[in-house]
Length: 119
Image (cartoon, rainbow, N blue to C red; front, side, top):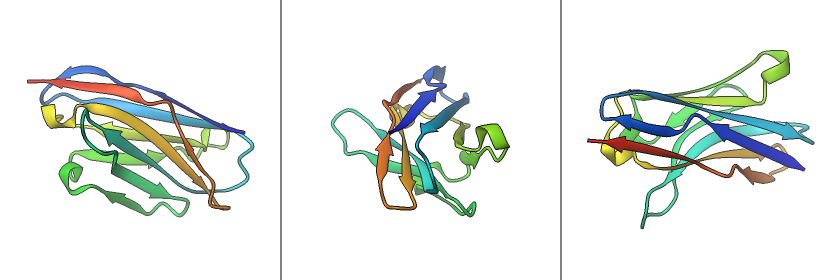
C-alpha cells in the first residue's frame, strides 16, 4: 500500500504565498512521476504541475511563472514533493490533490488539502 499525506494548505490573501508538501510512504519501488492537481467547486480536477523521476516538469498555463514544483532528493525524504505557490489569486482557490504514478503504472491520490485565496 502507498499513502500520500499532504500538508500546507490554508487561507491566504491574494498576492500571498503557500507551500504544499506531499510525503509518500509505503511499498514504493519506483516512482514515474508525482504531481499536483486541483479541483474547484463545480469544476473538473485539473493538472497544476508535475515532475518526473528525471526531474522534468510541466505546468498548467494558468500557474506558469507563479508556481514551482520540486522534489526532495535527500535519502530519507526523496518521496516528498513540494508545490511553492506565489502571487496567489482567488482563481487558485481549490482542493489540491497530490498524485503519484509508479513505474508499473499504478496511480495513488492524497486526501486533498484546501487552498483558499481571498480577494
